[in-house]
Length: 261
Image (cartoon, rainbow, N blue to C red):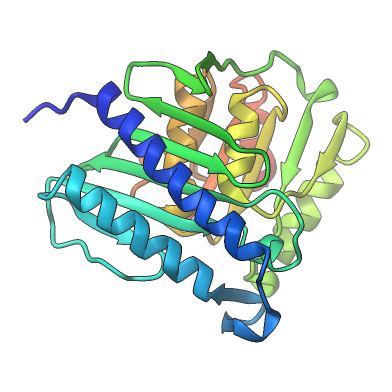
């Protein structure tokens, strides 16, 4: 079965917007007392769970036969041909501290291929989206990666929650690129870092110990904008990994060399 991907993507954009509106409204009356700790420095709130319920219900109506890989576990995957990958609130720590960006991220996969991706940034109202073969878009405007070489590149070197395991990697990345690239930033949202690469706001992004919900939607947006996304070993199949190297393509080998060193 071939899906009408463009039409479906636009419907998913509306789902993401509704979830984003819910998140924005809840932020106005949010209390830290309702935050739960999943792991050390890894948080979840009733807002994550409420957003996921809203998204799952809407996506089930759009494509009843599809399974789900959702961060908060409100729906499951049972080897369906199509499966949704849902992060109902990427950047929960940012959200808790009212520190942008934070977003909704939704991807649809068929097997290991990403069919569509939608990322809605709550604080700006920007909606990034792509479908396979259809290009990448931001609110109706086409997206293209930037053309900077590594010496002029703005990089996002994120800090995952697995701090002990990742500390040697981030030290090496900072040693390699701080003072040699244009500059380095940290955003707190994998999905938004990927979309910023697609929009040419960033030139590269590196992180490990992620869930599929963190990066599948944004990965397609980058690829459809002319960029490249792989795992740390350079693999194109992201469906079973937990690492991401995203770039404007020109600097991809520079980033891979640094994580493999």
